Image 1 (spheres, one colour):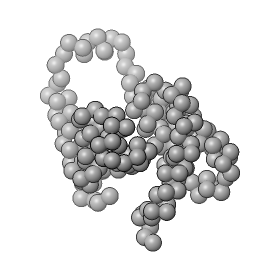
Image 2 (tube, helix red, strand yellow):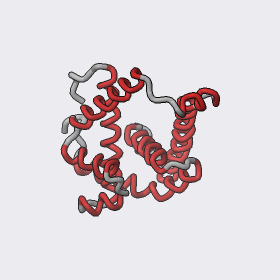
Image 3 (cartoon, one colour):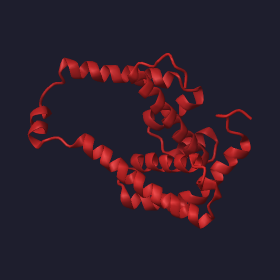
Image 4 (cartoon, helix red, strand yellow):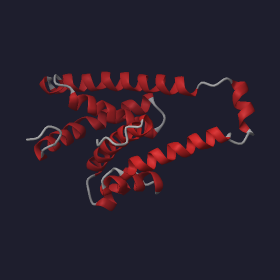
Length: 183
């Protein structure tokens, strides 16, 4: 078995882990966070942490659940800290910028971000590109995407989470100028 390749058995274990804990974690995070997208991002990070933790598999079912709750809480807090730090702007600046057109520099930076994103999306597989298109361009819910792809919604959610993580990595490489590297 190659490292980095997920076997069908491992995939089944990952899906079982997700199915076993999602019904408890989703409402828990919904009480902590308001944005559905933020909740899904944090859930993704929680399950990635569980799947990459060497100690997690050795825990009992109850210990795993406690571990997941603790990680979910910490990831939600980290998420808010990160986003709060990025969005705090003095009130005077927001009033001044509301009526202004973007500066040429702002337009250039926005255009550059769009190019990075398009390039990153182009590096995804056709199925991953389709997932991104259905979710963010057609604004379909995961259950609707699952129906269209004829896959279980848990599988689609997991596929989308993996795709978003890969897209984030590709985008960050684009920003850093590492576009020649293959992920």
